[in-house]
Amino acid sequence: MSTFETHSTITCPLCGHASKDEMPTDACQYFYDCKGCGEVLKPLPGDCCVYCSYGDVKCPPIQLGNDCCS
Image 1 (cartoon, one colour):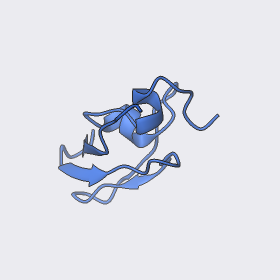
Image 2 (cartoon, helix red, strand yellow):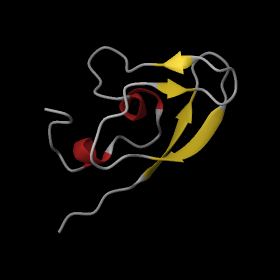
Image 3 (cartoon, one colour):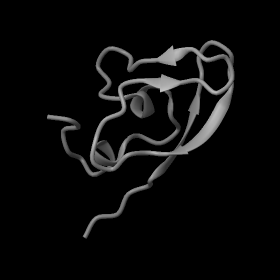
Image 4 (cartoon, helix red, strand yellow):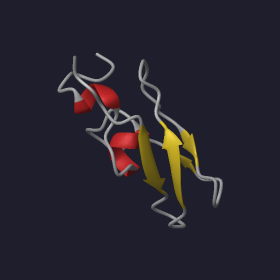
């Protein structure tokens, strides 16, 4: 059985606010409201979710080597 990290620290590219959050393990998170400035973050082109774009840990499906949200 494979294990994966379930928490990631998202850092807002606009205000620099960082927040450690629990990632969903069964879905992608396409939108994230920054807890610092309120900006709605969306994945960067080529990324499946906000954790892959702005987090210090990629989402669980990517950690396991799967296609995320396919």
